[in-house]
Image 1 (cartoon, one colour):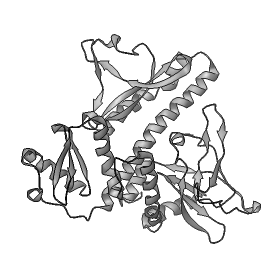
Image 2 (spheres, helix red, strand yellow):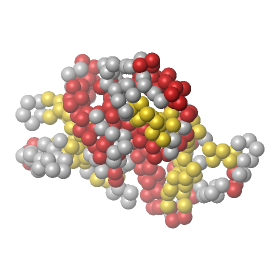
Image 3 (spheres, helix red, strand yellow):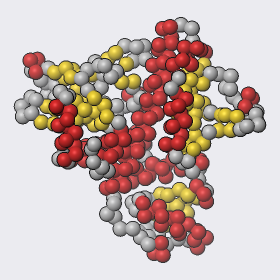
Length: 352
């Protein structure tokens, strides 16, 4: 089909972001954030000219390749919004919505990357079966080597997709595997999530939001171990030397507590609910701590432009957080480190 005949071609594209395509071997395809009348935003398929006037999608083998193209395009998204919308107030609120949409997509991907790295690390000492020992139906003999390669990387898997062969295998015994079905989008998605969830003893087919909440809880002791690493001690010493008391990294907060024995502690960031995943952070805001809650809600901006003060609280069902004395209320700025650094820390890479 010709490019100009594609659905929504005439609707302005203000930003791009890679989305994983489960039906295409987990490749990455750019989608377009379209700006509809009344400033409505929606993600739609993105197409470019194939050189002969026909439409083709932009598909990439890796996330790194895809996000580089998207970032270059997104550098000028504010200008596109202002060009398409006349009202200054509507321009401002729409720009915030676009920022939130981009933040949400990147944050979710970065979090899942961190979880997968930790799942692989936790199972690094598991024995890897040799290819000759795997038990497969005779008609699936061609999958012996690909299956061995998958298990060599993630030996804990119970469900594995092979997009090249359009097939999914399920573990039946310790070394025995059986044919489950041909691939479809939902099953391929389950197989991808299996690489993360099963590494924590969970299933990739369960409710993904609840599964990730369990993984966040499982990661907290691991995060506390970071406080003992020389590289992290150096990072936090540098932060204190600069007068910082709150350092945010991934889904965790390094918090310098001066009430009692001065020490660094680990807290979780807010964002357990779906609605908070893509909150637009207010980097100039501060955190007002009136209690010793284990969750830090970072300051954020509502879609109407209202700036919300950061605060501390307990998680649901934890009971009321132990209050601080009013004389000990603290209002703190914070610094956010790139998610890549958090992945590096979990992967035992040195802090520089």
